Length: 443
Image (cartoon, rainbow, N blue to C red; front, side, top):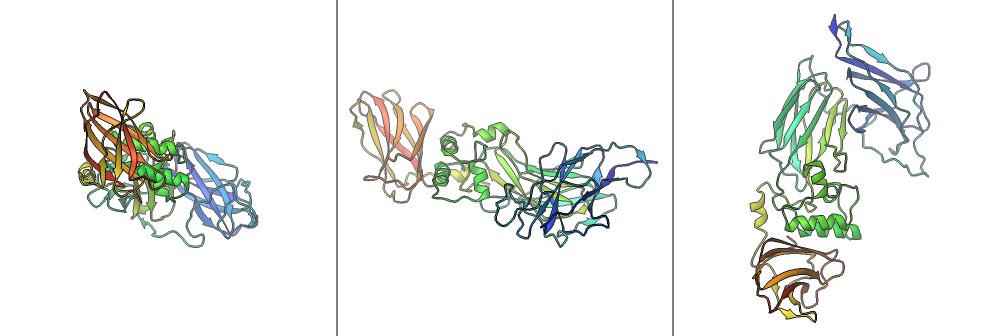
């Protein structure tokens, strides 16, 4: 007698019309709804029930199954009633036990051509062909998992990413090399979860231009791809707004300012699964909301050696995708004393404050800029920054008395009159002496 480690589950459901195929969802306890397994359009058995066997599932874990139907265009109907199963590991014969269920799932037909589905369609493999590449079979030994991690901005290799593979009995861990590559091994036949994580400074990649991208996306003048939306949604609420832009702008001038999603989840990198499809594989998309869901690839089970099990790294706040592995040194190169920016002479205002104009020598296409300035804190105090455009936002941060960083972002190119894009407002008894240390315009 040996202890059983896995079981096969046979699901059954009645056909629905019109259906071009079916997707089976497996939810492991403690994990969110994952990418389904597309089983195509199997023929019903003699009793009219369609059946599918899910092999080698773990014992002692709550397993929940649901089935959906989709039509020829891939539009998906509602999920069936869930079927949950948990079998404790008990002594048994050497063969793997089979838990059979022919309970009829309450499927809804896929949406018709005249109706829009209320549930987002999930990408799936071809319903008529097995996923490729096929894992190399192993017999109860170790299965090797290989892949690479790339940066979302330019698909360059992402080094120093912690990658883990959890097969339920042990947690294997490694770090990506200079080419972003990794390799791990786990027990073949076990349900395994592959995930990636990275934290640390953003290397100055978050700038005023990232905030401008958000404002433009909100205003409808810029279209962001899915990776950019994930990076820009620094509040983690699933939508982009001026609030995201303001948090990003604050981060641009103050490296200690926390982005809400990064503070909530204690990490500023998210990892999108991007694996080559293999048998019994599911993916979990990362979320930076209160759930703090890490992106993962689930193998239920891991059936053998697999390759190209990749992830794409997204840095929160870096909407433009200009992060580089060189870090802060690379970001510093974007600052220059020769940037097309100058400061005008101080002018007294009617309220006895002093105003210093920020002038861009070429503002026709600029939507963001950052300045670093110095002044005598014994004679003046920087009260505020007032953008020239009503739709622009501005922040200021003083790292020490007399030195300040200023950032301004707009939804459209600055409509500058004589090049004036903003005014620095000072409290001072006499004209403040303000020095422009360096600047960057649109990065």
